[in-house]
Every structure is written in structure tokens, then in C-alpha cells.
Length: 385
Image (cartoon, rainbow, N blue to C red; front, side, top):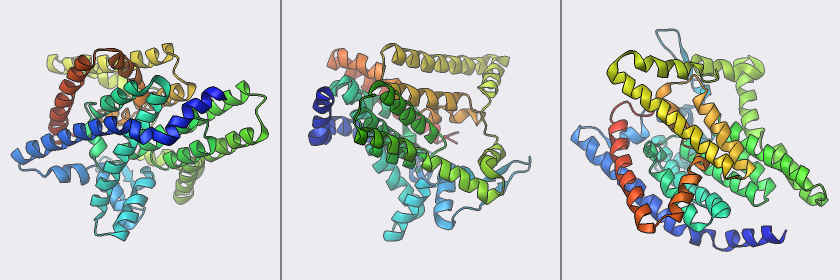
């Protein structure tokens, strides 16, 4: 208990002050990305703001915020795209902001994304700081900011909101705030289907805590139990509501996802897609890139295990990675789906923290520029469906 108290106290009194340099660095990276996007888009006669707020999923979220659920698009090939596939927390927030001010639903989604991205960066810092110290926390935030698909963090999508809720859930677990963890996991479960990964992390850590602390006081055990009971209510509640709405019971949400050709096939479809890249020379390079990327993700997870990351982090990042790589969803969205798996970055953050500051800054700065350029190119092209 003494060790826990000494670790929790600084978080309560000065975590924002400790995180301030990292958050400023994060804001600078995101500002660079938005600036490059604005210039790149202008040269092509496109609106950077439209790209951020009114394409792909952002349109679906804004539509739900405006008119509620019930919109369906039937494609010529027979696919049925229903807005029930999108979880409700982001459109709820968009509707709330639009109702109290002059913002449109698209504007509200952009504001939520900006605020949530800062909250996510702060949460990532809090987790990394708690596990590895302040320097590693700062580098973890910057690494998350400079990911090649980091521009999504500034889009009217749910990735930033989900990552913020997930990061603070994990921090609450690490610091023994079980009821808070359960409540945040509930909210994460209302944000994206991958909220199940947050629930799994809370339950795994709580069960391990019960086994480890068999002599814990009754209030402590009660708080853990309450946290476990709260955690799955968001995801389960929405899935059951969709089942009731569609008349197909508990599996109704799976039918909705099937209409989008989304499902969990253990990675078979993704493997076939990657193998199909080797049919010609130019696409073979893309295939090699896919294999290298997947290998890098698996290697990073193995390093996380070897470094004995806390159980909650391992369960969470493992579940996010498995759901992203083993789903039969659109393959171009895989990098975006991996965006919330920030614990995978902690080994790299720790290495940067142990390296010379100038060298680390040079590496991350160079990656930041490359990420900004790639984000602008990507969003003006195929983008993140």
C-alpha cells in the first residue's frame, strides 16, 4: 500500500503539470500535420476542413447526430450499410455541442476530436509515466502523435475519443481506482466495438487483483466488483439495443456488421489480401510492406510481454491488435484500427528516453515531418475509410 500511495499522490497533485511539455509537443506535431494538410489540399483545390469533417465515417456520425439512427444505404452489389454499425457516444456529443452553440454537427465532431486527442495524449502520458517514468511518458505521447495515420486523431472520427477513454481507464486500473475504471470502460464501450478490449483489460486486472490480494478489505473488494460490473454495460447495452431494434436478438449487431462485410475470421481475409499483392512486381512491394508492418506490430507486442508490462496493458493492446488484424473489414483501414493500441509504443518510448535527448528529438522530429506529409497525401487520396 505504501508503494501505491507514493505513485498515486503525484498523479493527483501534479499530473497535468508533469504532462504539460508532452502535451505542448503533441499540439505542435498535430499543428504541423494540419498545416501541411491545408497547404497540400489548397494546391489541389480541395478543402482540408471538409476532408477532416465531412467524408467517410464522419458523415455517418454527423447523420446520426442530426436525425438519429435508421439510415440505410443499399449498394448495387447487395451490401446493406446501416448506421447501426456506428456506436453512439460520438454522435451524442456532436448533438449536445450543436444544441448549445452555433456549431454544425460536423463542426462539433471536429471540436470533440481536437479535445479528445489532447485528452488521449494526456492519458497516454499518465499511463507511460506511471509505468516507466516522465521521460518515457513524453516520448510515448510524441510517438503516438507521429504515427503515419496520426492525421486521423484530428478528424471527426471516434478514434481519439476512444483512445482517451481507454487510456484513462487503464490509468485508473493501474492506480487502483476501480469504480472510475469501470465507468470509463462503460463509456469506451459506447464509442467503438473495440471497447471490448477495454472491458477485457479491466476484468483481467480485477481478477488478478482478487487472486493476489485475497486479504483485501471488504470495501476494496466491493469497489473492484462494482468496476467489473460497470465495465461491460456500455458495449453490451448498445449491442442488445441494436438486437432489439433489428428484431434479431443478441446477434443482431453481427448481422449489421455483416452488411458492411465486417466480421472476425482470424485474419484469413487479410492474409489472402496480402498474398494477392504478390501477383505483380509493383504490388509485391506493397505486399512486402504489409508483411513487414504486421511483423513489426507482433514484434512490439512480444517486447511488451518481455518487458513485463502490467497485465491490463497487455490484455488491452493484445485485444485491440487481434481485433484489427483478424477482422475481415476493409484492409486499408487496418492502420487506423490499430491507432488506439498505444501500449505497443511504450518499448520504443523507453528506448528514446534512454537515448541522448538530441538524438531522440532528431529522430522523432524527422518522423513528424514525414508523418505530416504522408497524412496530407493519404487524406487527399484514398484516405481512411
